[in-house]
Length: 244
Figure (tube, rainbow, N blue to C red):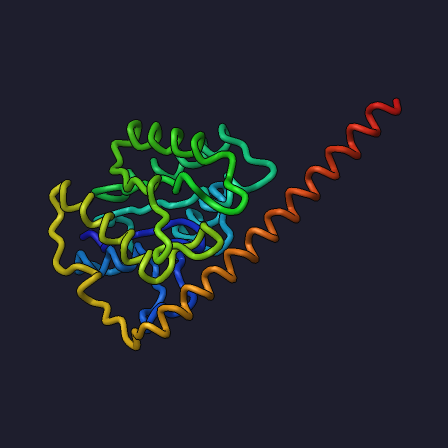
């Protein structure tokens, strides 16, 4: 007997964070399970990279789970990989394929998720390569794809341009359910119908806008500082090379 929805990933799939107009920030994969009327099993961990999914989350599932068959297996990881200085496209694809095969062996359907094209401050350099790898893995594994390359609306994404807001998580779940429904699964309830945003006023909306502007400015300053440090390090390295 299948045991519902199984999910691996990083903080985006782990969920948790600030309320948005009274709506709790919950994992898109959890919202997807609720939409399907199925139990949810999550192994995602904040800060995880693809290698962590393959070497930590999968073994944790193997050691702990009393179930070995699921309706849907979800995998959304990579945002921490593509933003890292040691980004390795080949290693990412290898680990992604390994986890996708693991899910394929245990799940009726596997859902892989692409990464938003405009990710982070400064914009991550490895997104295109990662998405190409994800699409190749999906084709090889016979997996479904939830395409988030265009994701990034202001009320759906936090100021860091990495983490979804509470509404963003619901938006992702709605699209995940569309993909699954197109493949024959029954959607029993729409996550958007389960939330009841409260306390909206024009004043609170303006406060939210100013908070977003303030946090965006902080991210830009942080990104600029990181860029300055990289440039200083490059100049220093060039100077050492020229003095030899």
